[in-house]
Every structure is written in structure tokens, then in C-alpha cells.
Length: 386
View 1: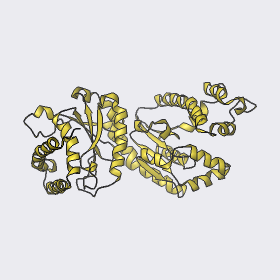
View 2: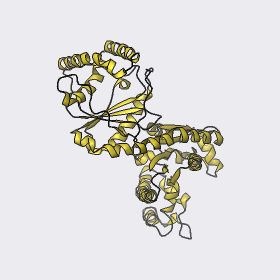
View 3: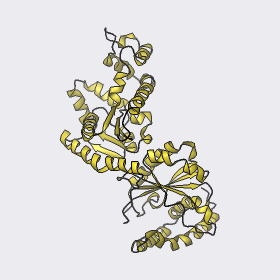
View 4: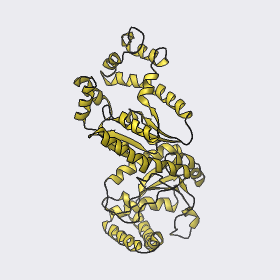
């Protein structure tokens, strides 16, 4: 199955998005519903809450009085963290039990209010964040019967909009009407979520368009999300994970595809990463097993290549062995170009010339052959080290 993460602040419209995904065929695992379930009367969760916050958080019938708990739990950060330490593990355990019973070909949408706070975002191949301005969210909460002070306190206790944007592969604007939001969700489902799910199942890579586009500041943000995803998937097997290539050079035109280098101790280690990287949206391309060598030592230029299954963000993962020339060159090349703006212009001219040929990659190689030796000389002269 494919698991998609969904989050948003209180009052942002997450429930509307979940309902729309459900109508499209998604299996919704709702964190709010589970959070209520794990603190029902007679549960371990309710017992721990009473021990931590007192019996006055209960109704006379023994059920949880949520406003009474909120008044205590949101009073300060320490008490909020106590609440989270009790509820989060129970919710996570119950979520896994539910997902284990889902069909293998399903697309599961995990509705997780505290996705930022739990640090789970990198475990998903796609994270969707629904947002709306704070003023609109407060108005919605007041209409639900919450007083303004409580609404603002709830919003302030959650992750900030900036923190949510940092984990978002997709931002859904819900500052308009519910109908407008539902149309955005349907478009997302059919044009990104389902293609992503298909590509992961079939181990299919997204091919980026070949034209060069002006530098985009969001490339660094996209790379940061991919790096966190890769680091979580690879664990200690990845010795380091770096944003490399043209999109890592501020101000430089490039193809709209993020290049990431994953450094490992051996290619045997690289081969162990096929399943975990595929699970987070990066299947392996078995037709590429080496870089073009720029020395006579061709064996030391072997690598493994994974690429993105997400049609909304083309990317490549180059898995190379620590200390080998191709691993060294990928790191040095970026810093060499950043330190020498004139070389950026030369490289850009070479790329534009190569675009006019039938084989873009092969047409760039003569320039790279020379660049490798010039970069080596620069590293030696400057004392550069990875």
C-alpha cells in the first residue's frame, strides 16, 4: 500500500480534505478519531491522563471531559508535552494496527494533526498540508462554539505555518470556499497521488523535462525535504546526504530536477536500500550502474541510481561509495562552481549546446572531462575537503 501524510492546523480544513480524498477512493486513517478512541473509558490512555492531570478531567459518567483536559494541558508547554507523551505512542500503535488490516493495493491517507510535532513527515512519500490564514481559522472555530481566546490558544500551541510549509510537498489553500478546496483535492488525487502510487508499485521513475529553467529558490526547500526523507529511510547506512548538481548552485539555470548524493560505505550497502527508498518514493533505475569515468580507474566510478516516483517533483538519488572519485567530484564540483562564477557561465553554455544534440548527457561529457581535472587542481590549491 501507499501511505500519504495529511496535516493542517486546527480550523484549516483538514476534515474537508479527508472527506474529499475518501470520496476519491482513499482509505482515511484519522488521527483525531484514533486519539478519541485511545482515551475512551476503560483504556490505558484515560487511566494515564487521570494520573497526570487529576480526576476532575472526567465527566460524572467516567468519560473524558475534553474542555477540562484542554484547560489544563494547554496551560503551558510542560503540561502539553505531558499530554503528548501519553497520547502519541498510543495513537501510533493503534494507527499501525489499522493500517495492517488494509488491502495491499490501497492508497492510505493518514490524517495526522501533529505531523510536524511527531517528526513523522519524512516517512511518507508525499505530505499534504492544508492551510488558511489565522484570522479565518479563528472565525471558523468561533462558529463551532469555541471562544476566541481558546481558539487562539489552540492555534498558538500547535506548529507554526512556517513549520508546516517546511514539511509540505503540497500546500492546499483553504482560504476560499469548500467547493474550491474540494476541486483542488480532486485534481491533486488524480494528477499526483494516483500517478505516484502507480509509479511506486511499478518501480517507475519520473522523467523531468529537458529544458533549462531559471534558478528557483524552492529547489533548496525541496532538496531539504528529500534529504530528510532519505535520511529516515536509510538510517545509519547513509554516511551523509547532500544536495548536489546545478539546482544546488544559487542563481544558476538548471533542469527542474533535484540531484541528491547519498554516500555509503559500499555498493553492497547501497543495494540494501532498494526497498526503504522505494517505500518513500524513490525506486531504483537498474539501467544506470556507473558514472562516466574521468580517469582510467573505471571501477571506482560505479554507483546506484534511484529517481523520484512523484510527478510533482522530479529528482535523482545518486548512491556512491565514500572516498571514490565520483563521490568526491559531486561534492567538489558544486563548491568549485559556487567559488568561480565564470565557470558557471561556461557550464551553462555547455549545457545549452548539449540540449541541441540528440544525447544531452553524452554531449556534456567532453566539458566534464576537462572540468574534473581542473576541479582537482582547484581543490589541491585551496585545500578543499568534503
